[in-house]
Image: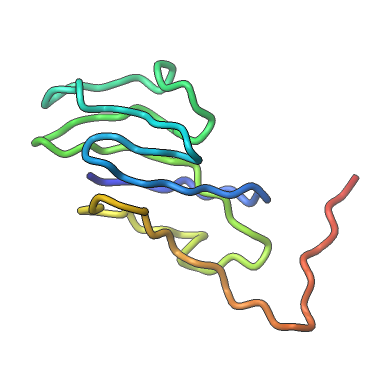
Length: 111
């Protein structure tokens, strides 16, 4: 499985667990096991705000793009993420933010 990340600066969080050809995204399961090699599932058919683009199966490998929320203290790895390749079953590990110093506080959101 290849997961491409589309970064956006936002305050919500994303947790993803891979289970074969299924992804559990923030507790909701998306099963792509019915896709055959060469199939494309259009973005419009995936009922989730977290997917950004079509899901494809090429050479037996599922390839998709997820929106990736970046916190205010985002790292270069979050801003310019590389594709996550050969993602194993279990929790998906995403690039982390920069460390926050004790004297720092997130900027206040504009009203």
